[in-house]
Length: 142
View 1 (cartoon, rainbow, N blue to C red):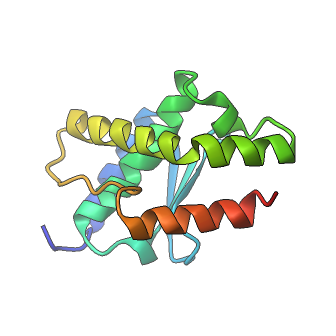
View 2 (view 1 turned 90 degrees about the vertical axis):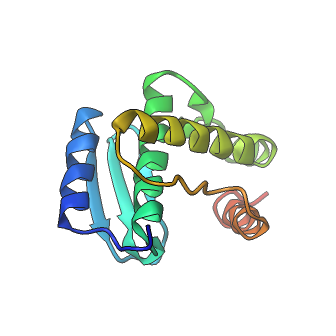
View 3 (view 1 turned 180 degrees about the vertical axis):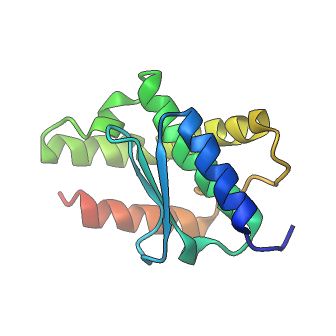
């Protein structure tokens, strides 16, 4: 599916997120998609969206972070609850593994939704892993 998401996709994403008691926002920030698990706000950066597959992958990846929060998976990661130095060590040691777990859960949530799309994992390619390591350097400097 090479098409871009349409209004029906945006409405369906809003409906699915409401089922998780989450609010989804769409915009062109250039900062990447993100989630605030405590506030239950999902921001999908449409600059990242090259196809409907990527769109749904981002939606379900961010929903999987909320699923983790609700199911007390990786609470330290999602709550950012350590001192800055300890959090930096924790993220460097565990962050990529956690994001890959979130991808796994996002794929599962996507399948359960019944929406037909090919899940595009966020942290598989060398480029994605390098981006993540750079993000850690910026957000959690030692």
